[in-house]
Image: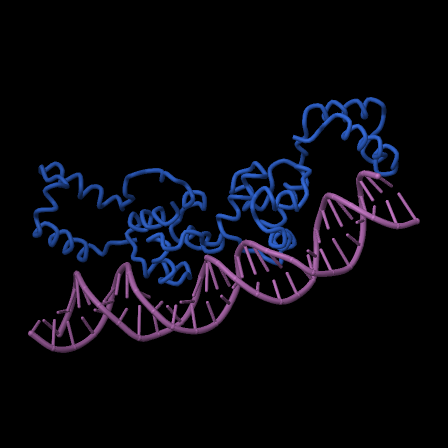
Length: 115
Length: 115
DNA sequence: AAAAAATGTTCTTTAAAAAGAACACAAGTA
DNA sequence: TACTTGTGTTCTTTTTAAAGAACATTTTTT
């Protein structure tokens, strides 16, 4: 489960594999292998380093069911999503509207964003 | 801390290094090295196997302060210890009386004992 | 007291973790 | 469209975990 958990938590945090590797001081090749379960038995030291960057406890990485299914995003983004929903734009529609994605990207780069 | 914790918990359980090694399917040479901190970075799989036999959670092994300082013994032994205390025999005295130890060993072998 | 068994350590060897490239591919930018 | 940059994968190599003896000591049994 460790690999899936790391992958999932990394995605939630919205950081890249390379960034997680760099910040946790774990080689990205190895991290890649762990996430894809080519390697399933990392040492505690590796796990602890990754947990630290992902900002979770070690046991969260070992667990077979991750706590919340919800993304953690900045409150401005929550407000933004709420606004989209108010306008009748749900996440199914988003997949079809490339322009909307572009707009979101633009908005993101304009407002400074991210951590 | 992992090494010290395993050693401590093993002693509390009253089992030998060899027995822990056999039951957890970890080589005793390696287990010996972990307990003496010649090796400080075991894999999760090794830790999980050891935790299972020691009957504690993984995080207990990773913790830097073990929960209770008290031994876990079968209730018959608690009663036995209570009786000794009632007779005015405290643990300081025990260290000086080899005969008492012998008696306890005999009692242990007679009553079947251990798990 | 000698023999046998149990306990933990110290070797040597093997298997696997972890690193460090070089790599392929997509995405962004000129 | 070409050029650069960012992302994750796939190699090869190095390091270390982990095993499997054989070993030295102590304890137990006869």
